[in-house]
Image (cartoon, rainbow, N blue to C red):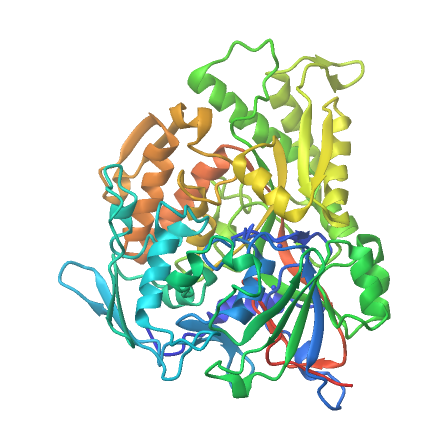
Length: 633
């Protein structure tokens, strides 16, 4: 590890390619992000690479000290351990400080920097292969109520986030820390802890199970931020400004639910002299028309969503304020794996039933016209997706991971998503579906396909994509109803598995393909598909053979826990780069074979920012930063 770890040059290069027009769950809307990491809009709601145009083009003038922005509607939570959405993460990044943070170097390039830690130290490898890091906290760190921030606060926060009691969506992010496996072992007694120690109030020691290339990036992730035990003992602490105690650049001065969250500068913050905005108003709205109206009348300086049907005209009308930037993310449709999709007359059971459903879902994925969605609905420079792991993430040899995905090396990814292949895809899909459903040749319609329901969070862009898929399916006799829900409700519904098909999106939490793969383990809180849960827990239809890579693992018709979970565990303990990346490709192969993940496009980040604003930047991981902005009068 080095003190300041820059984002890989390949990633920055890919972001530049995606930025030609101008970057958990994402609520994003197609044109307009756990960590759906996916927030609420499809594409302009997630943020990405640093935006030099927005940063440098502001008109000269006195800084008002106040910026008004709108990222999305009411956040589901602002508890760092429980949040799994990009809009929430952006707010949390303004309210909390972890050991590390994302920032800009002297040349305006995105890099990892020390935050609460004095420096991002190198780890020391132990005889057993574990790696120990020892961090010294900066002098003068305090909570917003004046109490000192201690190493013990980090110890408590990390154990809380990783523990079974909290069952945080992102608890698995601590799997790389020694002791995590004991916490989640079947015979765990409940008193197991991570191998994290407070040597004294200013010294924190943590031991990892092995070398982790992206460790510093995890330290900048909201789930790794500290909280104080006496504060979070109040279960509603994160919903009321009067009980919200934090250690970041801002304090929460008010929260008018479903209206606006106001943050004011924290004078107790150790780096308060570097914070240029005195007040940030996060307005809460998922109405793209409302966002645009407030931007155009000058009330809001930043919006993360715009009406889909106005994208083309807005690009022309606001050439310097309408921004498209690169982003590490994938917009996709997910199936509830426990949803019945075979006709009522089907007699298939067990492995045969599971394999048939996998084949059906993959056939339906071929019917979706991704180029139409990208060119006519999203219109933000998105790229049709043929894999789940997003464009911009590199393979072992430095090439693009997604370009090497899939068993058929004659195409990129798991299916050919070019315009030229669409007719062949359609024909192949129909032939597959005819194996399981009754097809009326005279009407070219299936007559016994169960009715489906497509769930999406309120957004004009998400709705338009749902309608496009609905129309495609209707053309062959498949009825798919659309249902929309407010963001927080939508997240709960999807997480609980109370849906058949749902809109989804994922932004990388760090620059490694595993960020797109470990979310699908049985115990993951981001496992919206419900792999290994409910009826699927007993389905023994998955195979895994790693003997050619030197492992003893060979499973025929095993459960999800016996195959995919084992594979992810092997990835996280593998220290050979080439083997590790091959394991990740096999994990994606197994994931995509189920058909439960249907990639639509690789994200770009679409937003509008006033010419009055300077100092703004965003990251390809979805975070937006307003604390160093200036707003000219």
